[in-house]
Amino acid sequence: MMNTNDTAFLTDFLKTPKQITIVPHRNPDGDALGSCLGLYHVLIQLNHNVKVISPNEFPEFISWLPASEEVLVFEKNFDACKTFLQGSDLVFTLDFNALHRAGDQMGSYLEKLRKPFVMIDHHQMPDAYAKITVSDTSFGSTCELLYRFLEELNLQQYINRDAATCIYTGIVTDSGSFKFVKTTGDTHRVVADLIDLGVDNPKVHNSLFSTASFNQLQLLGRALQHLKVMPEKSTAYTFLSQDDLNEFDYQKGDTEGIVNYGLSLKGINLAAIFIENKEEGMIKISFRSEGEFDVNEFARSYFNGGGHINAAGGKSFDTLEQTVLNFETILNNINKQ
Ligand code: 5GP
Ligand code: MN
Image (cartoon, helix red, strand yellow):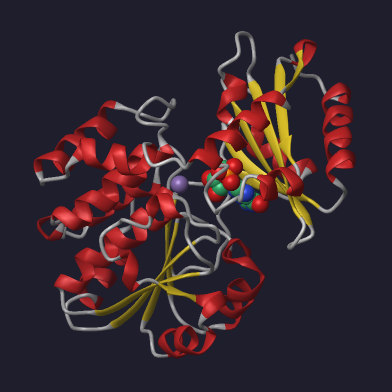
């Protein structure tokens, strides 16, 4: 996981109190915020001065994570965030591997920041900005990788119930509740340890998945009614316009997971959702696949994005209609079944 130099450096570095910033990617999901807060709960016990700084607001469905109220938001509070980053001895970046994934504002700030970075991440093709790069795409989540990282530093005794709850949450959300392909025996062994540490697992699942609003279900209904199937491409896609979002009083996180419904259709191995964001002037796209089709590659090649083989995202600056049309045209022109 790490070479002996890196392990020795971090072990020594963490021996005395330091100032440390932990950063998730923009629009943090359960794995991003869960890993950041998991690491936070460990490091504060070692008497470090630690802050999690999120590029932007995180969604409601993960706002119950222990210590989420301590998280600073860069795009809402530049001064405090920049001051803390300036005074930091080390910056952890979790669940992303290219600084632009922290968004335009925080990403460009981090690019100029002359501080040592530690990257812990499980996406393809890491950039080379970190002093220490802990990158392993065989892991289904950054949280599971973080657990092994903490073991390697001999810090597992500091994984208390709060840390365990955060780490468990990221494993659940990034594995689709333990069903995606990267869910291994080792994943379940980590999960077993976390439950033994006191994670209230039914409560976590309930907090994540049983708190939908009425509007959120109506929005899901709209997306399902928009579903289009391209049988010869084994593809199903849907879209939500800004008007759809407005009609159902869209809140951050409301569209999470909708893309997966396409894959639940018999014979479908590629699903996509296109979501219009008038404020940011773009279409946010999510791709999911089952089996061989590499959506990371697809998102990188055609939609300014990336991610993993079976889950990736991207964006388009065309209109919603044009973006959907482009998607269909691209699919019709590539060799995919
Ligand atoms: P989602 O579809 O849930 O937004 O993202 C799925 C996966 O793709 C996540 O692991 C996320 O980090 C990655 N991803 C989403 N959007 C982008 C993007 O615009 N660029 C890159 N490089 N990765 C993305
Ligand atoms: Mn992740």
